[in-house]
Image 1 (cartoon, helix red, strand yellow):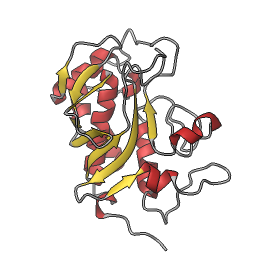
Image 2: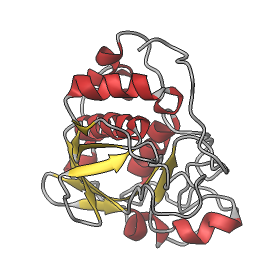
Image 3: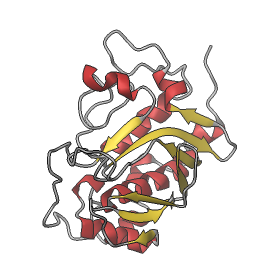
Length: 239
């Protein structure tokens, strides 16, 4: 039968378009909103300073800073543990700030559990996680404690033969995960269509090389996977 969506998953009277264009981060930018993927470090830091979430601004050896684990009204926890601060690239912190604003306003999400950013942990210098430029999202928790989990509510569902988006309107997470994908596509690198190729990896990603490893999380990445970190020298839009 058709499962009833939890109340916190039903969008209120605020339109998605208004959320994407509005909010504190757009105001802080002082102009057209630049996707997180296109921000320079300076632009990203300006946004984070205005939001008051920077804990350590000095860059680490791999180009990361420390920010509050509470961003945009949402607490980000690593594997269920609130560490108080998270280490990541400034652009990634802006992504989480904007995502937190959107999740909190649209769905009432209070907590997001992730499987890590892992800056500096990989021997491959071009790995996006190693540079603090990727996050693996696992679970989204509402104020009443109910949650949507990527493994339980998406990855564990039988995949389609054509490897398209496997969820149907009968699944509780159908609208939420599709909307999440659309939002992340507006901010991250090469999102493409849900179930397609690109650096936004989900349980329904088409590439067989990554399909099996992404049944329990959504991997959102800023910048390509390269052999050397790419740093933008000049902003495209003044922040």
